Image 1 (tube, rainbow, N blue to C red):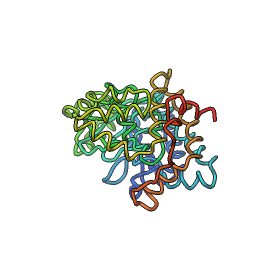
Image 2: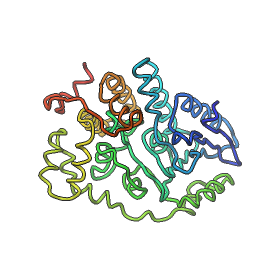
Image 3: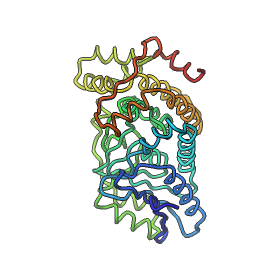
Image 4: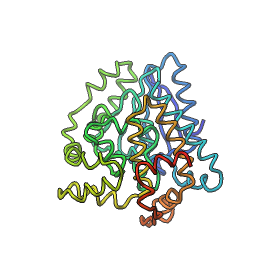
Length: 336
């Protein structure tokens, strides 16, 4: 065990608390292993009726994997980077199949790997402070942790917009995308947790504390550009957005213009493949294959450099010929 994951039980609730607040609870290999062990412990404990995931600190649940660590491993020991992802994806699969209710408290920042620990659980709780994102295209990567299963199943191409842009969205948007179930005010989370600890049925506890998140303006706006997002490749997406003079189409195009072109093309491919996949396991297996590809691509390291090492927010993406980013060409990356 590591003190970066606090494992405990109070009454009927088994707690898994991410405890790396100075790093926004970003996940290390040790934390993933501790979560596996904590899950084992709570599943075996007859007193535990529900498993509650939360994050230490005021800023959020989890900002994702420790990407600086992954970049370092990618340079020095790519096999270890792949081992991290393999174990993280195994954890995601276990959460999705857990025999006891998994309640994720997605308060504050919930991004990347943090989203993976949450969106596949039985009960996903957002608050007015939730800031959700799959921001990977902005670091030369792709939405993983089962996002290629969950995002394509959002209505109205909303999941494609979330995955491609990597933009941060609100509680109402997360619920509209089917990535969370209820909104509970952050001030009510202690009362919700106390109810779960007392043995109250999860559905009843959530209903007692849930509030109306309001409509998702994002879902409405994305529906207006859904035909553009359904274009066969990123060149088609960008051309369709160019032809749309709405403010939201321009905003979306401006965001996409800052992302790694290769990441966008590959993300679009993975989301489409995920939409046709039979289950989460198939998507996780495909994502692990993609990880091996991205460890060999310059954009992955350049995006992390710009985001968390030099912090200049000015990645210099590799130049890729348009012919190499067609739907057929990107699908062929898996056979290289």
